[in-house]
Length: 216
Image (cartoon, rainbow, N blue to C red; front, top):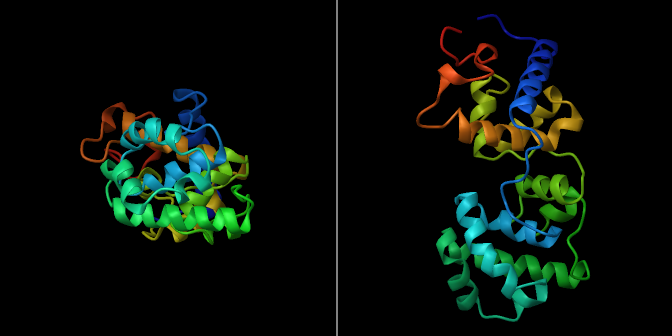
């Protein structure tokens, strides 16, 4: 198969996004939140955990802990117990406490709105920062989660496996206005059709645009 030019990838991605937008109108973040701080905590908890499970946990968690100081005022053991079912609860609890300490000490208890400030917080990488920036502050960003990583690879938009390198490839291909929506669209498509262990390629609305599709 001949090497695809950047311009050709951009054109193919434009068509892919158009079809996905028609299939999934106004896609929303899978994590439940009402403010930037809740989204930050929920995204930290979502590492190696399903969004559905995180939402079950945060349904009660966000009633108990409303501010960064609330997380600092309880013992590590109690916080671990409250988030236990999200997995890796010890590391997550430690990171949440460190993150909240930094928010209180350096940001007056508020979530900062820049990539550099967010990634300086414990437990926050570029994916988490892009989720917060895009969905809480309206600043475009491509959050490379498991769906984006897998499906962008299948679509031939990147050969990278490192999330930061995948993001770097995608920002060249996806229009900036669609950076945040890309994650929602690919996640919706991944749950509905391009399922990791049982893809429904015969039902795929972008199958003819996918190098991994049958007959391509």
